[in-house]
Length: 284
Ligand code: C2E
Ligand code: MG
Ligand code: MG
Ligand code: MG
Image (cartoon, rainbow, N blue to C red; front, side):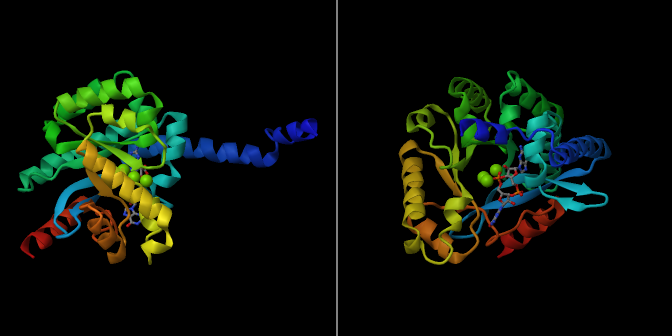
């Protein structure tokens, strides 16, 4: 029986696998070409004060404008980019674009709205990641306080001693750090306590289930309340992701989470549209 199952695992050389592998190699090559052609760009999603709707910061999210396939979202290429290592070329480009945009917004009078950039696990594991980040900030002339680094809970907890060292270095220089997709990696609270981070982001999967009736999803509601309580205890900002309706917003504010992002407030927008969005909001 074990033998039969074992044999069933050896699917490596089927024609389907060949074509899947070819697809991935093709995608990898076309990503590298796309980077040279300048096809990657950033959109920005406002993070708002849930009660007033006022924008507190922005999250930069990468997009690929493919000449034939149109707009491709990161879910389709970031996982492969992580695997092949292409992310080590794309990541710096993302941070550089975000920094240039911060400078441009500042020049047009937009101040005091930090921009968060997602850093993948693979990027974060580079031994000299701190220097790499600082170099890009210096090269673009951006103040560290205007930049936030988002790192997922699973990446942060994978190698905790390295994480503490790197996050401490970034924090000492004045960058903000947040833990993304929080609640999905079962990390030890003892570790979180040792990380000088500014915020935890409640993963959108917990928020999504509150759609119609929070009482119908007691586990998600409990996890959200636990994360909010944890944030309070450790003095961290708690940011909810994927806030799509007023039921979710009201649940969050009633339980002490005052910051969020999601389609209820705004989809991720191109840089120009962000200025309009903020201009419109400021007046109202
Ligand atoms: P994430 O960092 O957790 O980003 C949140 C995702 O939720 C974004 O998807 C955002 O567009 C989406 N979202 C925002 N509001 C709502 C909402 O109300 N409802 C729903 N259903 N979704 C919402 P996106 O832009 O497709 O990015 C997906 C993931 O790809 C990100 O998750 C992040 O892990 C990764 N990613 C995106 N940009 C970058 C990047 O520049 N570098 C790296 N390393 N990863 C990135
Ligand atoms: Mg993020
Ligand atoms: Mg997230
Ligand atoms: Mg996520």
